[in-house]
Length: 435
View 1 (spheres, rainbow, N blue to C red):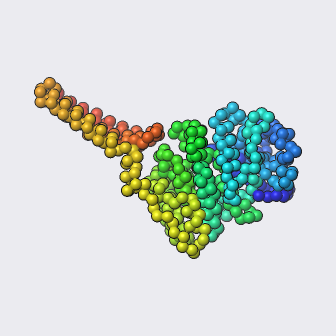
View 2 (view 1 turned 30 degrees about the vertical axis):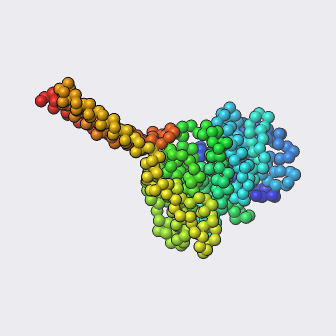
View 3 (view 1 turned 180 degrees about the vertical axis):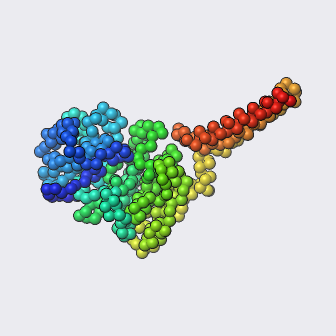
């Protein structure tokens, strides 16, 4: 945090250069073309926040908010003022998300989290909050300008971000958007600060209902390049999703690239769910085995196999010292067994088997009694045989309690099974009629 005045021509980045909370249409910094709406907003801020705050200039804007640099007269320090975009004044979900970000960060006090000093509303009812001003660059800007960081420095950044996440997780807050763009590097202190809690999920019992209402069913909020397998699969969100993103952040700090080879968004999502990360030591020879092991654990496909953020910070904080990582925690007796039981596969298979047995017994009795032709029994066999994998597929994607998203692979599976059923059934009927 800078406590002095800006020098002429000096560049300054706010805590998120506007609101970059998982929205792809963020505009970086300023356009020379005047914006009437932003000019009116700036004038309103100058009028209503004075004399305590003097608005210096606009730092940036995003899909949800504008950020301004301001000078706090009494404490003689620079701060950043983040205010909801006037275009979203009547969007209740946007307003709730914005206010939730302020509430989430205000509840946290940590040297590696951008602090919120105060919150309020303007006379036009737009919410705003005043936050710590960080003089420096984002890690994304730094990586683009300098390339991968030295191992020791990257390790420190991972420790500081992990420590910030641990503090948030302890309060029941999941960041959901951990990436280089949301990690700031403060030049004076050489400190990394986690910013932009705009899409954070509040998992504490008192806030869970509200957090759920702010995201539409099936909506993926955030950057898929940093999403955990369970988030991409529509499973329940936990703090371990942040740890997965922390592992990807570590790879990018050390290599300038992510842990997976992918040429498209679809390939990247598939890699998150199925592929093994590249060996860090193959990409960079001076990475110590301990750091590589921790990051690889962070990228485990099973959330319960990952360490928590506090464990990561503790393990990496003291290079050379032996700080044991907690053992792997299997979700149940086995990794996949937990997924099977959560999706109620045993119950579904038993129920399907019982129904199939009844259908076959009844159809066989009717065929034996010459009430129905033999082809009916054969058609029943085909329907049961093709129905079984369809039931397994449906149970895998939708057997868990609650509503799950319909995945594209299901269209292929169900479509293929339907074609097989129709083709075999048609052949049986043709053979029966011609026989």
